[in-house]
Image (cartoon, rainbow, N blue to C red; front, side, top):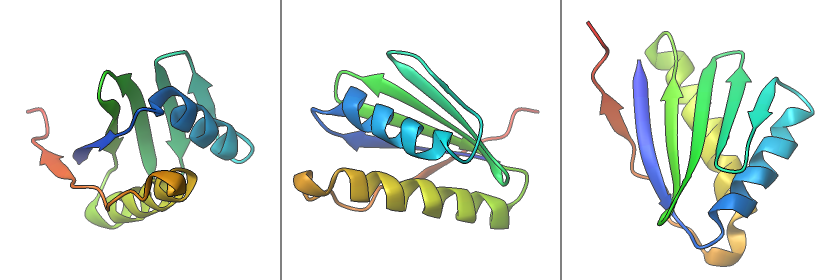
Length: 98
């Protein structure tokens, strides 16, 4: 299963870095200037910096793992962006490749 969301922010790179560093103490994380890959037990999260903010892409093996992954990543990201008074994200399920 895959799911994506966009997070509008002028602080994309800073928020991605904060998120990656926070989780990097607990799970494997790969971080570059424009991209982060987070390997959670329940699945994988990709975060990319875009001109409008951040693009989030999640992958998990089933709906329960996907919901846990989405919940963990979104709660943390919204907390790190608290100064921006962010709204909950709108997630879009992606079609699995055949």
